[in-house]
Every structure is written in C-alpha cells, then in structure tokens.
Amino acid sequence: MGRKYFDCRDYPGGVKCSVTLCADTVEELIEVVVHHNSAVHGEKDSEEFRQMISNEVKDGPPPA
Figure (cartoon, rainbow, N blue to C red):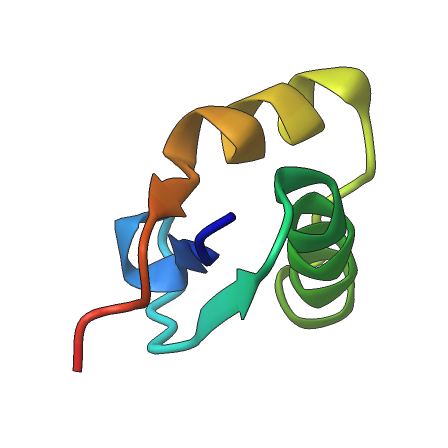
C-alpha cells in the first residue's frame, strides 16, 4: 500500500493555499482534506465535495 496525497494548489477556487496533505488510505485522506477545507476554506461537507476530493487524490508521496 502506497501513500496518497491531495495538493491544495490543485484545488479550484480563489483561495491560494500551499498545503499538501497525505495519508495511507483514500478514506483517511478524504477525512483530513474535508476537515482542512472546512476549517480553512469554509467548504461544506457534502457527498459532491467528497467525490471531488476523491477525484483529485494522487498516488505516491507528494512532490518536494
């Protein structure tokens, strides 16, 4: 099992964010990304939002 990551720089929207989050599973990563985006970007947790995150998850360690 490899790492998964989500790079907030790839997130569409007007907020510039340089945070990259990673985890061992897609499920764990989605929970962390939802929490970050709710707390920092004011996003609402929804199935559509979670699906968008899932579509943006990348395999491997985040780039340096």
